[in-house]
Image 1 (tube, rainbow, N blue to C red):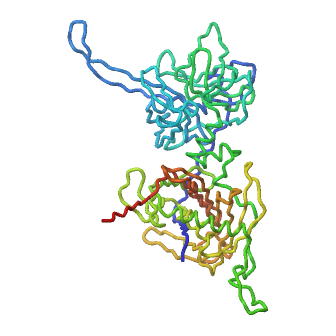
Image 2: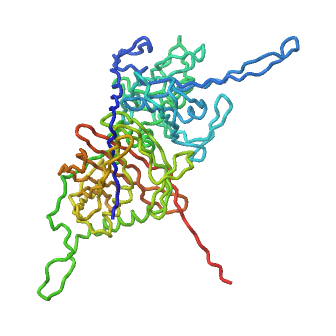
Image 3: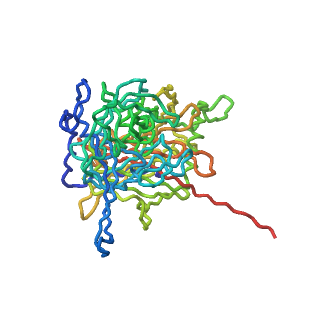
Length: 544
């Protein structure tokens, strides 16, 4: 029985050119005048961007002579944003900036997705009134949003964050794009300040270093950054200001937000987080048992009876937990995002699907407006790509109670301050559980043939043996002609808890990462599951 599908494809054609490298950081004194004796090494204008939306509404007005004439109403909203990552394809700002500006582009690049860290229905949300008169309820300590752009901003890049608690009196500098006298002309401005302490709402408070002859203008700087004056690392995201004080969202809150909505990006920016990396490597060398790795019975005993060998208790618990995980994912709806790329480049193609799993069988519908149901996600038209298939459910089934694969418990480890149990498994070619189906596309026809291969991997669990991470490596070491040049292929899955309506918490797949190597080229697919829903059926018998 085929329990999983990984379909790497090699399409004959020209290779994609590499993405532009991140620009070198250099100081720019013309944009931001110096305000301290500390020598600055960062050009913050390459990391902090203005966010502006201007809406012109034509109307009519009554003139002095009592005649109607044309009138133009100008509705402008301003904010500031920060590049996330080296390529600056994601912009972080405030939630209240995202909902008040209603911006569609940043520096000419179209916004294709918005991620909000809070909202009016959150527990602890309070009503906040803005100068426009609009009222927006949200949780102040999570006043964050992220814009995903269609492409990265040229000559822009992200900065380094500090996860350390600031000390009272610590000197900082605030960078943002406040409103100028002639709107919407704005420039990046620096405001010196010192750390005052945390607020009851969970924000960080900073006192401005006032200047008697130069009034401070901060309106429009929301979404800017607070950086340590000495290290130039980011300490917070500017949220609120008045004439003397600025409030900022903590970096740790941003870490939690980015980890939830963009886990692959989070691991690049915040590698020291407690969450298991969706790109994590196995901790131990390949597990390969002896040739009789899966004996059904041991030799006869003296009394002539046969018996099945007993396996360690921890292994038996893992099998049961893996089977429960597989059974718990037989009916649900989620949004699955895909990103395809090669090497260390930014994604070359992206797509999102609503995946419906009914009795263990998955179907796809383009998200958010797709109407046609598909048997599988459509592959991108690239020079090479891989698709993970349904490994998120098939790997737990393989390790579960049905197939009795050889499972070995390795020594426990501590990963990101969490103690984990580590198990290793192996499936031989004869088990026929790991098919490999390379495809060559010549335009008018394709050539493909599934090949049974051996596979192995690791299962990471918490101390209660709840599965957190699973991996699978296809054993392509023989380099058979049927592999069509592919030499390595691996899948890494992470799982986490979700709470849906009245349902008890359940483990679900969070991320899936597939990578394969064809000679010198490495192709990958990164997937993420969000917006879970559960299919449930309730029947009531009526007796006459």
